[in-house]
Image 1 (cartoon, rainbow, N blue to C red):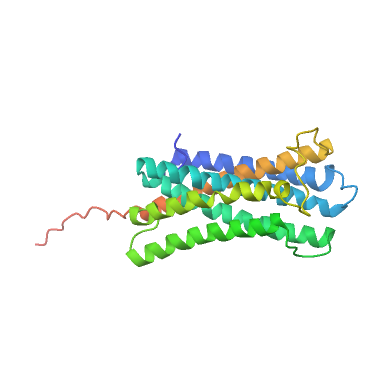
Image 2 (image 1 turned 180 degrees about the horizontal axis):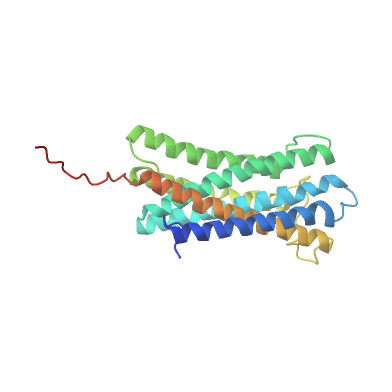
Length: 245
C-alpha cells in the first residue's frame, strides 16, 4: 500500500499506525514512569532518559531519511523524494531541539548546570543549526525563484546537496563521547560488553524508542501527504452551460 497516497485506504493505514504509536506511547509511559526503577546515582532525574534518548535516536533516523531521499532524488529526479527529504529534516530538527532541551534539564538536575561546553552538546547544537540552515535554504530559494518548495527542481537540487552534506555531522555527534573527553555518559545499550542497565530500564527504553519511531513515521507520512495536496493544482468542477430562452 502506498501510505502517502491521498486515498481512503491509505488514510486508514495511516490512522492504524497512529493508533499503534499511541498504544506504544502509553506502554512506554507506564514502563518508564512507574515500572522501571530510578537510577541508583541520578535518582528520578534519570527518567528523562525515556524522552531524551528516543528523541536523539529518532532525530538520527530522520536525518538518515534526508540523506537517503536526497540521494534518491539526485539519482532519479523524482520530486516526491525531495518532499520526503524536507519532511525528514523538519522532524529531525524538531526532535534535536527536544533532545537539547531535555538534555539541558537533565544536566541541570545532575551536573548542576544548564549548559557545559561538552563535545556532545556543542556538536548537537551544530547539527541542529545545519538542518535549520537546510530548511532556511529551501525557503530562501523558493522565495527568490518563485518556485514551490517540494515541487520544483530549482529548490530540490541545491537542497539535496546540502541535506546530504549535513549528515556528516551525525557520526560526529554520536561518537563525540568516544573521540573526546566528555561529561556525557557513553553508550550503555550498545556497549561492547554486557549492557550495564537494569532489564526493566532496558524494556522501558526500547518501548520509548519504538513509540517515538512509529510516531515520527506517522508524522512523516502525514507531512508528505500535506505537501502533495498543497502542490496539486485544484481542478475546478465541470460547468454545465445554461440555456437562456
